[in-house]
Image (cartoon, rainbow over all chains, first blue to last red; front, side, top):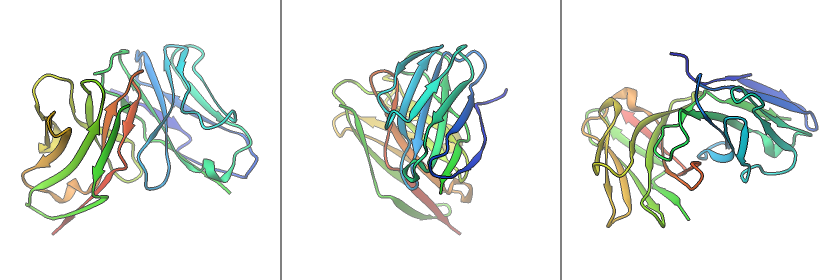
Length: 115
Length: 112
C-alpha cells in the first residue's frame, strides 16, 4: 500500500522567504509527527498531531514555524522568514493509533536549503 | 527524562562478519525502544522494536536486538554483514507523548 509521501522533495529558498512543506500520511493514520534532521544528526521532534488536534508543539524552534492538519489527514509545516539555520531535512511520520508501542512510518523527507 | 546514546559514529565491518551497533538508553520508566535504518536520500525504515514483551527482538533483514535492563542497553546485531546493509542506523526511545528521541546515528560501512 501507499506509504507516507512528502512534497516537495527538495526546496531551495532565499533567506527571508516563506516555505510550505506538505505531508500525506498513510490513509487512516491517527497520529502525525514532524521531525527536523540536521546534517549528520539524528531526527529531532518538532510537533505532533492526533487527528486534527496539535497536542505537542514543544519542539518547534521558533514562532516562525507553524504546522497544521485541518482535516486530520494532510499536514503542512510552514516556515516564515527562513534563515540559514533552517536548512535541514524535514521528516514526517504517521502511526495508526495513538499508543506508545505503535510504529511510526516515515516519509522520504523534504530537503530544505536556505541560501 | 529519556535519552539515547549510540557509541561509535562510524562502524566498518567486512562482508560476512558480525555487525554490532551499540545503543544505551536512559529512562525513568520501562522504555519502548526502536531501531531504524536510513539509506541515502530516503526516510527511516523500522528494523525492529522492543515493547516489553520478549527481550530478544528479531527484525527484518536478519537483524536482532536484545533488551538488557541491567545494562540499559539495546544493541543491534546481525551475524553476517551484507553489502546492502551499508546505511545509517538510528536507535530511538519513545518519550511521553509518543514522540521519538533519536540517537546521533551510526554509519555502517561494509567492506568487500
